[in-house]
Length: 397
Image (tube, one colour):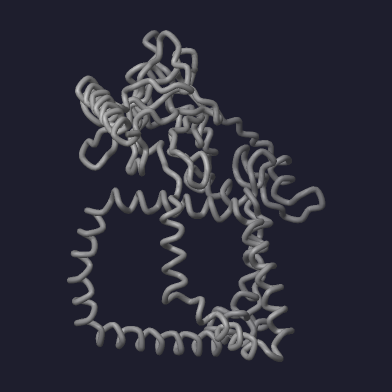
């Protein structure tokens, strides 16, 4: 009797559960519509939440209604997930009072080892925060990431344990001990030198980075001149062919040049003493010319206007009256005073003591106080030089 009474009651319960499930599925659009229900205990979205689209390469087992957190504090929820090509686009709703930078990062995290997945929003990992995340903004795929799944870790561990190198660790350790036995000091020195080398590299880190940046700029410059380099490489080929064809001639030229150098060296060595003697013989002439100073050019200046000084030419060209134009003629007036006193003439010819003396030179001529005098020529030693007939004195002979 008790079983017969319970059986209709059980059937009524099952019918009620089926009816509720049917209503839920029909009213909410199937299994996907169940995710749109607001579950208790979720984040408070406030009165004016804003929507953000986050792009991921892989969303793992993230589902709608999952939490959205900032610094492990719930600030929103996942509203929907859809696939666009090979990119998963996750639509999240964030509390309107939460201010996030426009360049915020997003990641899929896990609350515990076997816990639920959630979306974590954070400040940018590189650079400084800027702007403000607003409704309709998108966090691109280059600013998103995901955690490694436990299944991936276990799979990698199974690959290591099954057919990996764990079984050979004992053999590797034993062989390594045999290889290093008796070489501990050498190994210690090697490690010390390696530590010094790495320390030196660390101290020169800035220089290494600068060198790499310079190489990068050089590579960019070369890439920009790729066409020019290609033309140069195409053009240099025929030039190399010509050099190859003329290789024998170039070798002969270099050998002849080497022989010329040997001959030149021999000539210089054999004529060294004579060249030094010539320079020593030339030294008195150069010394006297240096001592003459400006006397020689002044004497040459007087040579072309003798017996008149060069200033006499200024009297030939005079400015014309009235128009100011300079007119030059071929004559010049000269006033001379002649003293025909016989006593004075005799004194000028014989001198005060009765010995003849040359008359004084006129004003402006060589020998006067107002014009330069030519220096006397130096006496040059000429040892071993024969005298020509009629040109040498008895002293020279």
